[in-house]
Length: 116
Length: 108
Image (cartoon, rainbow over all chains, first blue to last red):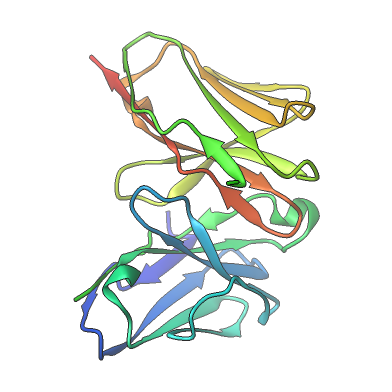
């Protein structure tokens, strides 16, 4: 299934590095999301974009910087991360963010990030 | 209090068994409810939505009890391929909240 793609699939970076995660959806959806999944914890919503506008920033540290140039693409720029930021970062999309349009989210395969 | 609580398991059941997972949510204004399935090292995928009237999809039955703020998933005649983590998900209208997931292993 290639509805939502993410690159890279794996990333190892040092605390002083700058890297970016990319997400692309081919479903014609208007809403895109970044989630963080750490071991033994529930998925944590980080950011929500609807029609390219950020509608949710769930108290995420500024070392994570999202960018949404259009409804199909979403980036997560990473800078001076900490080892505790190591996790699976999942991108998702849905038709919209309210009502039935938000009801089904389609996830990408995720980027497994390790911060050394 | 967590928005969504699930028993993490693990549940280890023999093939053909019936297994039930439960989930509770804290926000009484929650609007829609789902079960997602996540295979090891893969992304979550929607298994089924959950309605107050209950809904069934083959061997899977989901129930919602709004009064008790409780969601369940019943899997009948378990298959080896059912082995996965099952995530309870609640949409409050503002945000999706995920449970930590319940791990199921079906044993031959």
